[in-house]
Length: 127
Image (cartoon, rainbow, N blue to C red):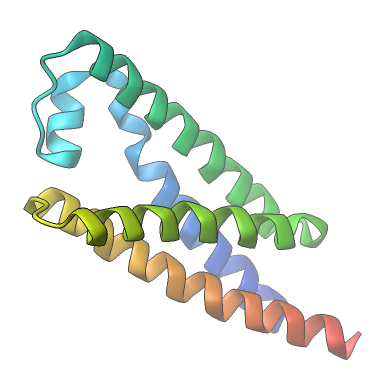
């Protein structure tokens, strides 16, 4: 049972990381996602690349959900991803409503990863 919960939680975190992938489509989609206008071509390139990287991380998280040997690395990667964003957002402050939604999604992801990590360790100790 614990393994199924871990799988479900990692899929959830993977989906959270896959949501920004649509930003690769361009400035309009990034405006919808983050509430920021990207008039600088260089910044647009960076943000679209960010979308690709989130897609890769999201796919890895979903794959790891079904391959227990990858789960410890998925926990680490997921925590680093969401915690770094949350620390940056909170330390800078003054973010818009769209970014607030990203912070909330990351809080959900941290909680899911924490529960999944505890259940993973407990299931390993029972083996």
